[in-house]
Image (cartoon, rainbow, N blue to C red; front, side, top):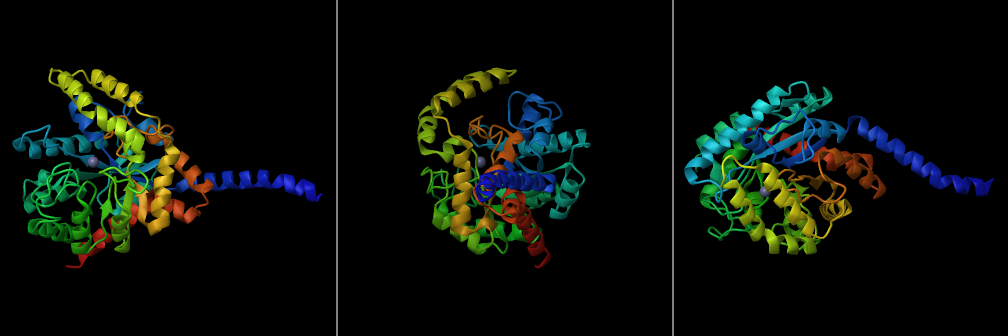
Length: 389
Ligand SMILES: [Zn+2]
């Protein structure tokens, strides 16, 4: 009898895990802090209602992956657009997002508050929110920032790949040794109106300044861990700890090259050649986007394969270092040129992370936080800070 019971233990453990997984998946809020699909609506007429064999988000795959909420990224990179196009381009992409959400109202709804996200999620739809990537997009005007907030923008990354008048980028010339005086004013205004401060892309010193000056916790909307993959775009432990100490959240970027250093080395070595090839295609109107995707695919194939379990290691690292309250998902899907890890190719795959976290010994409550509730909490804290001048 004893021997039989022993034989049944692993079987029972599997059953129990399945049970937990099913229970979690019934109502878990999966909230991704950074997905860059909207520019495809404008540039290519990409539509969310049908399933696509390319890109990383559409409604059928979103349903399969039980995705509940997304902060969609909107940007105009300085190298792609002249300064006079930054503001109109940003507005056009926000318009594209609002139009696409309205066209799919049976499946998604625009969310302006944390309460909206909860209500929309409960109704079985995806809650769509907007975010801006790069302070240069507000044309150095706090009035423009406030208008973007009215259009539904709920975080702004202080700088993108280049430094600007507010903050140093981690990949740009160091102009201010962190945040400028204007950058501090920007942080104060974002706190006052209830817009989250995003510290991805900015220099370590700029992150520490933002954490110090912000009255609300900050997010790193799509940043991975430097201790695992020592590359410039990732965050060192000391910065992760500083963000967490003030209640903030680091949302892990899924880019295979940011998760794994050998993959990054190949990506980095090839990047210029890839971008030049792509530019030769995009210089010809109308652009053949299929050709662009084929080029991206070819360069992706040259990278060593990175398994989705590496992504779980990044999540686990932040959870162990700073606590499960301070790590979340910021896939950067549709912003990573198809360079997703194997097993986590698009938004249909989030459930594999829930399974992975169960296997790694995380509690239901921690899994819910990591998969979505942490971002929701910081969003709510930003709203609360805005109510207290
Ligand atoms: Zn980015």
